[in-house]
Image 1 (tube, rainbow, N blue to C red):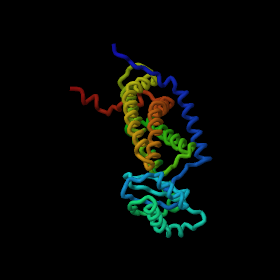
Image 2: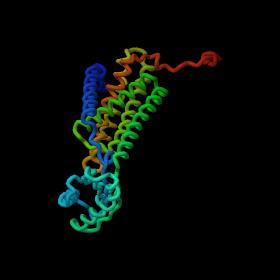
Image 3: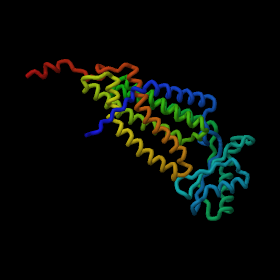
Image 4: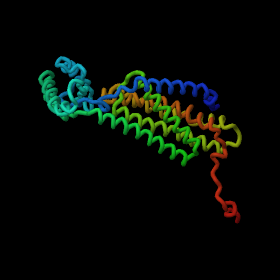
Length: 316
């Protein structure tokens, strides 16, 4: 006897819509009141990149910097276990132009300090000052990039499937991004260029999942002779559930590995993607499908148009 799985996803669609609406509202309120905890990539400060001859312990570097007056410095690992990046927030008492001129000297000073305290050779790879203007431009361009991506996706889905499907896909993507950003805002997690890259990756992952579900819904609308739109959507979701769960599970295994052993440089990237994968899996089931039902998608919307003269051509 073959086990037949039939989960009534759409039977809980109103509850899911209320829960999603609540999360989106909380995210928007938090973003409006608290904004995001922007990292040095989006604010002012000095970035010093160093290479050690031996493996370096982050805590040891933090202790040396704190003992020498760099209490606010943030040390992250990048590349190998011998490469670190020291982030120094902007000094409010010093003009930005002066800090930019002193960036190289600060980098050399830190490299010499760590070499004397920790031992071994410390090579200064680079020392740069990031101004607030550059950070504002990065934030603006990043936001614009996400909006353009959403617009292009909406056109693509409308052409490949149908306009109602494109609305559902874009609503699901906006839902995923807002909730992910909201979680970063509520918990004060650092938002840097790695996180921005994760946001764009979330768009791609969630879109792929939504397209798979949408393709099965379109196929069933054309193939199934009986059943309401809700029943056909439910059938489609059950048929794609195994694929959705397996893909999400294997992706999460990789992301948790990056989170646990990837070091601080990739930590926020992994956290953002883990949140995005979980929310994206949920939205492909309950948001995109929910929207097309509320927009009253019908079998006629998805039927293949018949070209004029086709019937005559088939007559022998």
